[in-house]
Image (cartoon, rainbow, N blue to C red):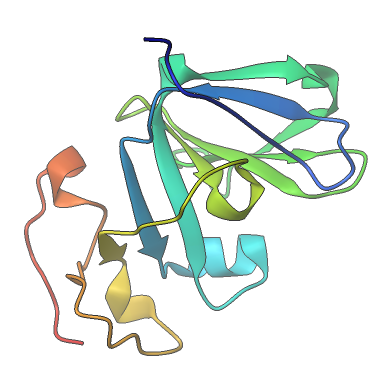
Length: 145
């Protein structure tokens, strides 16, 4: 059986990604950085192991932005259309690809991260975490809806 192959990329098509296998996880992120980066009240993200994400077109159009020198989020966007393309998390070996840009993916989040920073409440029964997914970084602190 062959591995699932999906594509993702920017709004104009100058940058394209190849994603193999299934995402490690899907989540809503409420952190201020994501909200400001994506220009939305919440970010719907899919985490993929780094080795499952390849830039297959337009690597020269990817521009890196790190909010601080020590930032664990390496945000990359298309220099042609300005669309966010991916967020690398090298500390955990994962790459976040915006769910909306992934072909043939049914977005099925399992949790909320950075929930105390939310600007709108979600009463969906999913666990709400103070920080990043506890399965990845070991934080098990949940917060009320």
